[in-house]
Image (cartoon, rainbow, N blue to C red):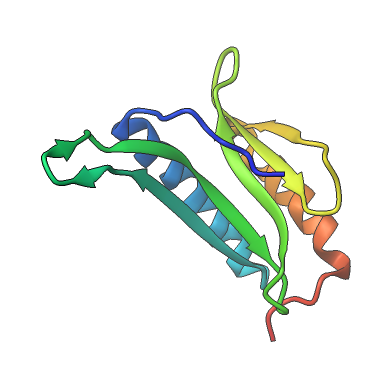
Length: 119
């Protein structure tokens, strides 16, 4: 199932990317591979131009075999942004406030125990 996201401001996309990058760095310290994917929509045709649209970035968490094991995005919460973690083996999303990023890290690490980690 493909997920489409509404565009956000460039500064919002950069902020979310920084949050995901920090989580990816923390995962890397535990031997888990993560990559932040940033998407910019841009229409360039002869005499037809549109301003860039920024899609919220996604952290793809992968096993040593290269398969995506989970995806993490940042979503707007009622009082603050939250990490939305979606394991690849299900359709459920788990939300963790960004101020409690250690909980999101612990959740991913707990799910990673049966993954093939980096060698």
